Length: 376
Image 1: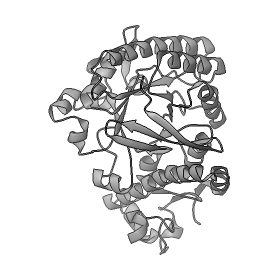
Image 2: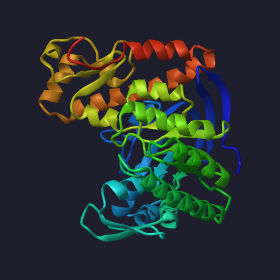
Image 3: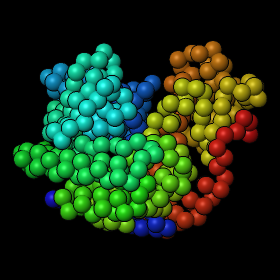
Image 4: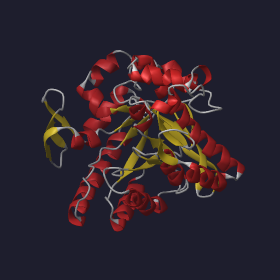
């Protein structure tokens, strides 16, 4: 397979690189806002561009169920449909099938299930997932995988991994049979739960199959943070240095920096948008809940020096008023800030890696970050 990723610098375990897609370059480390249903919640595409989002996510399962990939394809593909001209990564739908679908039946062919909206009988398998992602017009497609629950036994995790690897080979075969011109990148997904031998076997087998990049899946599914970190540590050493590495669904700001230090390049997480809808904002010192009384007369921005619209134009007092009054503008502004914060964190990590100062940056940030603060 062609080398889509080029490594520019390494420092403190972190990597700065460039991932070339058919719709442009992605500079890594990178945080990718989650646009599950063809929208990043509360954000317009212009606002995402202003926040310097390089790439966003779409969800294969949700878009297949509603409005359907064929409709999106007829309307010009997902980029045209949602007016986004930069790269899009779509996940395989595997995680949602196993976490949301009703009455699912797993077979060698794929998964038969009733969708979570109206119970309609639906099927997604390796080839189906790839076809949906093709019709959506994704720039980075993910191989279809099974995400085992936490906890699970070694035997169950091994059986699940074996199925995921067989599906990965079928995804690669489908990919190889598509016309090369304009072909998207395809990433394999390592699994293996919390078992080091399975994580190693998964990574080695996927590399043998050959993908444009490699994701670490099956993490942040209820396991303690140390176990999550070990799952990444048990996979990354067996993934090639000249390919992008993607930790799926992670994490808090300190977790992202810790994972960058472990050689991960790409991240997505719903936390910045989900917590914003509850009035929670991210700062370098930790999260603050703007609903709390001490912010009622606070004239400061959420964070000094932040260039987002919430911080350059409004006070904490005003934002608290909007959130308490359940005004839509409040959740939009806090969402803008949180996404600016996450995107900037990844770009600052890149800058420090290139400058050779990432270790100090990571240590300073992590030591100064608290999980939650009522006031500051």
